[in-house]
Amino acid sequence: MYRIAVIGGDGIGPEVVREGLKVLEAVAPLENIKYELQSYDIGSQRYLKTGELLPDSVMAELGQMDAIYFGAIGSPDVKAGILERGILLKMRFEMDQYINLRPVKMYDARFCPIKDKKPEDVDMVFVRENTEGAYVGMGGFFKKGTPDEVAIQEDVNTRKGVERCIRYAFEYTKKRNKRNQLTLCDKSNVLTYGHDLWQRAFKEVGAEYSDIKQNHAFVDALAMFMIRNPEWYDVIVTNNMFGDILTDLGAIIQGGMGVAASGNINPEGVSMFEPVHGSAPQYAGKNVANPIAAVAAVSMMLDYLGEKKAAERIEKAIAAVVTRDQLKTLDLSEDPGTAGVGDLVAKFATE
Image (tube, rainbow, N blue to C red; front, side, top):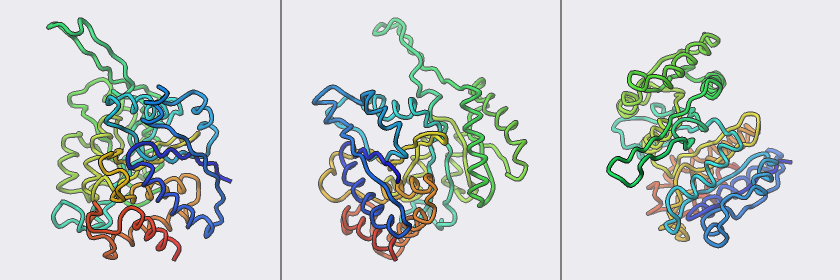
C-alpha cells in the first residue's frame, strides 16, 4: 500500500493533478497497485490566510510518505520567491532531494520548433544537482541601497554533493541502456573552482564505468547544440543553475511546458514528482491547461516506486494521445480541454 501525498498548489496545479490522479486510478487495478492519498492545502491561499508556508508538522508527515505528487506553485498576490523558497526549495533541501530528473522526449514532430527533427532525435534526460550551487541562498549585501552596494551570491559545490549526483547519473545511464552516453555540462573554462571539482569527480567516478561513453560540453555550446543536433545527447549531468535553464530549453524542444515532467529524487528517501510548468493563474478554472506533463509525472512516480509496467502503460498512452491526431495543438486551444485529455490518456492506458 503506497502512501502518496498530494499537493495541488496554485493556479492550474489542482486541475492538472486531478487528471494525473484520474489516470493513476484507471491504471492501478490493472497492475494490482494499491495506494492511499493524503491531500495537503499548501500554497498561496494558505499563506495569504495564515502566513504559513510549509509547517514543520506537515514536513514531518511528508517524510513518512512513499512519494509526493505536486501540482504548481506561484501567485501574483505573493511576492516572487516567497512561495518558491518557502515550499519547493524547503522540501528539496530538507528532504535531501538531491537529484532533479528531467526527461526531454519529443512525442510528435508537429510540436517541435526545430525543423526536420523526428521523435527519435529528441530523447535525452537531464540529471541536475538539486540541493547545492547558487540556489542554496548563501551570500549577502554590503552597503545595501547605496552607490557602493555589493551583492554576493555564492555558488556552493561540495565533494559529497557533486560526486553523488555524478554517480547517480552514471547509474541512470546504465539503467536507461539506450546510447550509454553521459555528457558532463559545465563552464570550467571560466568558473574555475567549483567546476574543477565537477571535472575531477566526473573523471574519477567515470573510471568505474568503462562501458559508458563519457564526454563534455560547455553550457553555452550545449545550448546551441541542443537546437542544432539534439540527437547527439543521451544523458546530461550538470549543476543546479545550468540544469534549471537548459531543461526549460529542452521542454520547448519536446513541444512545450505542457508535456514536460520532472522528479525531485532522494534515492534513499522521499521523492516528489511534478510538471515543469508554473501555476499559470490566468488559465486556472478554464479547462484549457494541458495535463500531459502532470500525467507524465505520475508515470515517473510509478517508475520510481518500482511499478514499471504501470509507468510504461501511461507513457505509451501519452504518446498515443499526442500522436494519433487526438491533439491538434498542445495549448489545447482547439482540443478537448484539460479533463478531456485526462480521459483520453486514461482510456489508452487501459487498452
